[in-house]
Length: 99
Image 1 (tube, rainbow, N blue to C red):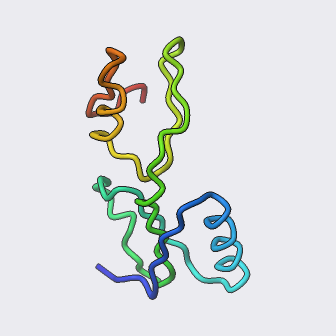
Image 2 (cartoon, rainbow, N blue to C red):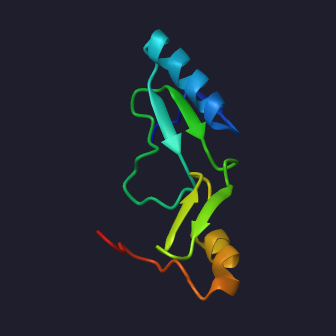
């Protein structure tokens, strides 16, 4: 396991865009981190770089009961989403639904 060279905590899409552009121009690897639920080792900074910790981007921005869709930011956890959905009769189950 290799740690990143730096960690940033953007809180808005515009901040992510600016940081990504800076990393791109400087040829610095970017390592995204959402909520830490992945099992694939995707946040391992094998070549150093900057970890984009997106956990503070945790807004639920849109819910459509008609088509069972919801728009969330990358820091939204399943538990937080289910709390939000509690009074609608819907829930987001564990697993690869729709895959």
